[in-house]
Length: 246
Length: 353
Image (cartoon, rainbow over all chains, first blue to last red; front, side):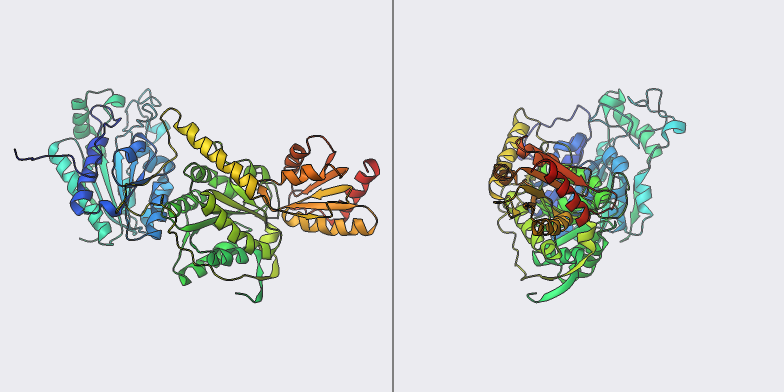
């Protein structure tokens, strides 16, 4: 029988701790597929965040380091400057990148560090049981916005990718989504382009991935996908926000 | 670099880092350590190394974390308020068993304090500083020459024990100029670090982590760290002793204060008072054994610090109540004078000796 689908080499053959309907597993797989297709597994170094993906090193079969909450881009900067021949990427959630790590992501992008960032935005803090993220939508109920996010007290959803796109140091920034098979394929090609950007020494690349958190959205996995399509994309429009090389 | 030259302490330390094979530095400006940062901004590109002026102390220590993950000899520097910000990163370095050198050119605190010399970060430096059960090796230079020498030692210890090492200087040591001999450059090749992340070519993937969720795993890490600390304690204690055999009163001081104490000791002895001195060079591991030994013959101890009394607690722990342990300190940028120390020596000797 002809094998038409298999686990990609860089993804370990283990069960993840992710909840049903969570997007992290898909995002992990896309990254691993891209790494294997580009043949860079043996020179890739991942930087794992603090958040739901904190255990990413248990799922990826290449060199990975942890980083303190929000500091992945600084850690990646250190690694890449020491060994520029390595392919270095960070994997960060919206709390890690858009809240506690805002300083690091802005300055790393602005220095034009030749690294790749995969930014997973699911508009909530999953690891700590569903608190508000900077990317939480207006009106969204979380455990720290029990009446819904109110802009008067909690401010607005933060569009970090748009913010980073205006910096002269950033190279390639695209926002993608995981809410349908079509969009997953698009997400994969964006991730591949981002890694290729680094391989070609073109500088800072970032892919924002709109993802789901059914548990802390209080939705079924299927309804969570609908929420991405119907609500999240309105706040966070998909597409290429910047491509300096085009 | 074998001739005698004149340099300020901050620059001597920076050049010594280069000679020790440090090729990655990240830092954030703060007085009184700016010469160190500026020197490396000029020097790193000359030797093919990396200098980054980071956006914050947090970013700087985490860049150093990354450079260490990649196998480089790496250093950051700051002064007291900035070192407070680095504590999270130092805890992660300790938890991930990563070598790195952190320089603290201490200034007065608490808060923003002032930019004058101080020794009030002793507690923070030797007791851990960040969260969790860990120690950094803490080295205390007392001259510009020693700023350079101790930097070489710091990189060696960091690599040997896979641990953060702190060089604890102060504003005076950083700013003052003295003649020194820098010594020869060592060729540093990071080939004996099998844990380094370089890409998993020809080996299973390496993981750097301090998150250990499985039952017993974190306790196992802590046990390993504590075992290592015991080895460090048994092998790496360094101090300088003066007149320890025949003294009634033993001064204990490190860094800048030790130099003033030395003058006071000499003058006291010239006046017929039997005063000796212990100058800890390693503040962690602290030279407790020699203090215990000396307490058998000496009648009293006097700790002198530019603080309200921090190291004195470790002296008391070593002495365990066998002898009185007195303290004299100045803070806020005031440096104890020889005369003040002599007065204190005389007042102690009237009562105790």
